[in-house]
Length: 240
Image (cartoon, rainbow, N blue to C red):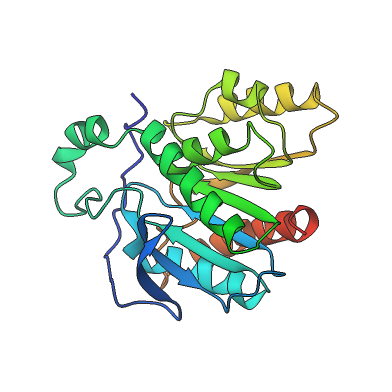
C-alpha cells in the first residue's frame, strides 16, 4: 500500500485561508475556487493529497495560478473527511473509505461542470493521492495536460495509457514512489513521442514537499517554488 510516507509532515489546516473562496457545490462538491471566472480563460483542477482542501500551501498555489491567468478549482474529493493531521493512525481505514477511483468519478463531474460553463481548456494537477485521480483523467481527451507531484498509487500501466501532455515531479527521498519508479515512468513516456512529457526528480526533498513544506524554511520554500514554477510553465505551454 502506498501509505508508508504519504502523510509525513502533516500540515496545519485552515479553512479560512486564501484569497479565493469556498463554494458549497461545484460539480456536486464543496470546492475552493481562486480567480475570476471567464469562460474564455483556461481552468486548472487541483486534486489535493489526503489532507484535503484546507491546506494553506495548496491554497497559496491555487492563488498563484489564478494570478497567472487561470481559473482554479480545488474540489473536496473527501466530502469533508480528510485524514486528520493529529491522528495518522486512521490512515489505513481512511484509505479504504476514500479510494482514488471514487475521486476520479467525482473529478469527471467537476470537469463536466467547467465545460458546461463554457471552459474549453482544462488542465489538472494532483498531489500524492490526487495524482492517481489526475492520471486517470489523463487517459482521455477531456483535459489538455496534467502534472503529477510526488504521486501515490500511480502505476507503470497508468503511464502507458496517458494521452495528454504529462509532467511528473518526483522527490529524491520518497518511499511511496521512489526515484527508480519515476525513472520507469520516464522510460515509458520516452517511447510515446506523440505525448509530450517532462519528468524531474528533485534532489534532497521528501514526498509531499510541494504542499507540506515549512514556510519558515528558506531552502524548503525554494524547492517547493521550483516545482510550482515547473507546474505553471507546463500549463502555460499546454493548457490554452
